Picture (cartoon, helix red, strand yellow):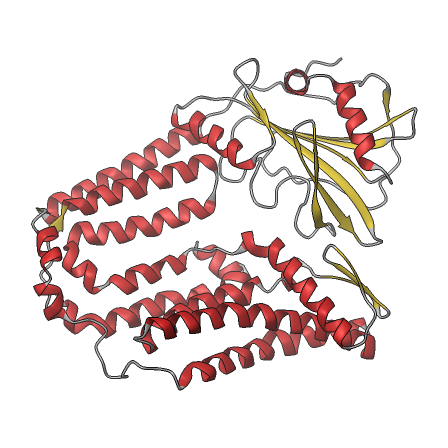
Length: 476
């Protein structure tokens, strides 16, 4: 997690969260020290649940789940060792710890689309002719893409963390908190649309190179700082929490009958500490055993001959190579038939799933980040595969259809759902069952790509046995 905070500009703001947590605790320190600490066995139950969530996230290869589980384990361990009254006194700092989790990448495609639509509205209001194709915008000054870095996700998630902090520290009234939080969500999205629009306008005035440098310096370092200050000033006159007020009332916590009832569920703190360590070690051991799972694979696999189709060497109109990080075997080939259809076939085979080798992980598959390709829209499924249109500068349109195969033979699963793939992976690793995972992507950048992909898939026959044959190294 700390590596992501430091290395990814999207999460640099999280480097401030530990200091904010220390400050929040310091505001409550005098009152919290008046609360009696105790071991509390329900906290152990919560810790075990968080530990199991970590195991599931580790088995599915979902970093967001494992990182969230680590924070939940820390929260639960504090309750187990210090009890419900201290937990109530530190409720907001404990909850704010969730902002230690790097999240937000999942919002990028939606934010790219929203930003592109805002830009189009502003361009039309400014009288600049423009056309929108997915996240690509064509204006007289040139051809622009609302890239992942321009989605505004960095500013949005930073403003969410900032807005929650301001709502707790500066407001008492819940309607005012809700209003300020709504402002913290809407303003960065609109501001990012203005930023992208301004970059396009400046490109038409001074050229693309100047606009890119101006965007980096002014918009990257000054614009959003100004927007954040203006948001704070908008809420300033509505602040209703006195600056000198202590955030918690120790007397009220001690007098609360519900907390008194929970406090009766005590356990010796030394026993609680030992059980916390035992549960943590058990989770780590289970995860280590599952990470060693590896299904036997052949030393070599090849794309087989497909009836009615032959291999061709002509390159695509824009380079396309899916990402299959950690795969034990990767194949990429191009096929053509006698009807003029041309398709690209990508096949990846994994001996197991885990950290750094997730077939359905973020950025894996048909649309690798920073490849020049961008998501355009979903398309009609073909033979049960997930279909999507992607686009590269030109514009070049490409249809991609993806299938996953977990295991081999009659007990194997074939489908296109990333969520179901992760569920199957979790089940295999929970049972310490070693089975291979395969990814098949059939794609085309032709004028009528769906017809070519459908014809190729029909020529393969039943997909499950075909994938099993390729995975076993059988050449047809």
